[in-house]
Length: 52
Length: 159
Image (tube, chains in turn green, yellow):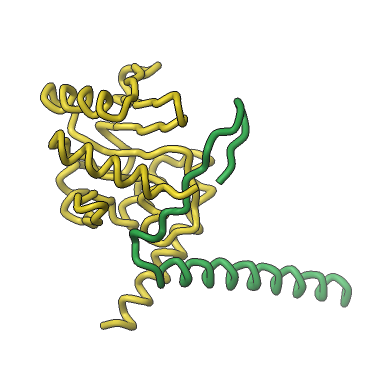
């Protein structure tokens, strides 16, 4: 039982960590003027792939 | 890849041909701080005979061709430029948005090279993606919701 709860706690922490990183990335983008938030275009490479 | 040169070009060409169109989709969301990427630019416009003439002129100015939709009822017109795979979609209707006028009333007006580009409000983009419900729309919804949340917090902090 203890093992399961520590796994659950670990996964919860991982989820929170991922959310924190995403929000930080968003805050960094929001700190820039809209005209500088332009690195979002992916380019097609070959038939199936794409890259930034 | 930096979309700025293409945004400058689109803002200029749309202004020169007086074609009113509102940028929607992931490109519009990214300009509002959402960490999302896209392969194309999506616009909502009013499909009138005059606007279709303007769209043809826009395609010519971009060096692109207009592809006819596979499903004509979709009202999707796709501008494609082969040399750099530029793809710009013009839609007459999208999920979750009742009218162009309502979208325009809330749209942001961003300046690119002295020309105004209408960009749909993030809340409208979220509404549209939620209504469309395609897997690729659902995949970015959480990111867009968090961006809107952070944007509101920032605005509240400034007020």
